[in-house]
Length: 511
Image 1 (cartoon, rainbow, N blue to C red):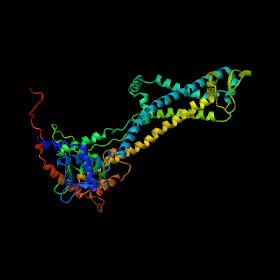
Image 2 (image 1 turned 180 degrees about the vertical axis):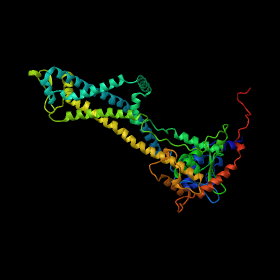
Image 3 (image 1 turned 60 degrees about the vertical axis):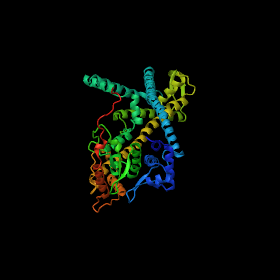
Image 4 (image 1 turned 120 degrees about the horizontal axis):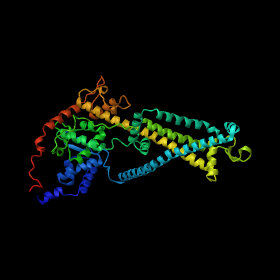
């Protein structure tokens, strides 16, 4: 290879791109390949290679002149999407949000387990202690004490709580005693297969992630499979039907494909732009992975992978914490809630409440104050057993509620995008006459709440393709029909033998 040939392909990429951007700025954002070569003095190979990268970075739109030449156009100006202060700040902010969200999520998950389960157990333990204390006081105090307790002076107000717990125990005992052994064995197997408690709680609060997290890779595979099954040629309507993107976004996205997979925009004799990727045809595996042009669909994300019964239990546990927290906070803030000890007569060494104080709060107050040695149990109860669990309980309900709204919006966008794929495919199959109401949707993931979404999406495509609705409400897409025929002719002209690998003529491991 000569020295001059080496210099053509051995160049500084950034320098070439900067010169191309400078030309586009001077030419008001429009130029052909020949313009770029003439105004920069760069070799044609360098211009053809780097104009794709510039088109991707600055969002070029491709136009075709009457002579059939491709005109690179930047109607929004030469603003880089990857470099400069704005994009750098966006990347920094995105990285910061991602890191902060990860840390906050980890801390909040740990807090959830401690608060939801821990506080519930604390409240249940206090309630049980109060029940046992009430039973002990009633047993030792006689009938007079019982009458006093019923009037609200002692702990007899917790009699209903003890009856409730007793009923639950009895129901559980008898249901297990007379339950079929096979049912008990099946229940044990189901419990063994269940996910850990903390993961189930996280699923309720945070969900299970985006089911389409790897969508970019899936989309690329679908586009490449279509290209390899169709002689390396794709038109813009076909590209939009695969990706589900609206026209403006699809025109922007195709630039990325041209850059990443060494494609090039071409113009048919009739003036239709299509995109050729000959490099993707040189493959050993000739399998068709389009599955009859089966369009990949985004999935509708469920609220949680937990059974509804499990989520109901989490809500019930949090509801108990909410009630207990509200109770302790209200009791600690209410006026004249004083705790007194009476050491006279039959009431000596017994806990007695002044008028208006509930027995449970009085018991816990005395438990922390007299037995626990806390100087100011009221403040402790108000904060530790009142404000903190109350705030957590409200947040525990608020996070899934907000996530539910965001998830509904995300699923609606996915359904619209899926419907766009179906509607555009219907246009491709029969561009001469398309009725929006006749678009067949077999998958619920392509059914938005808007009943007229198909009409709106086909109207969107019609505005881009220059189609007009007929009197009967149907659409005709003559430009898409012509582009479809010219793409078929371009594919027919591709020599498949040129991409065949042939037999191996050299093996690095052969002796």
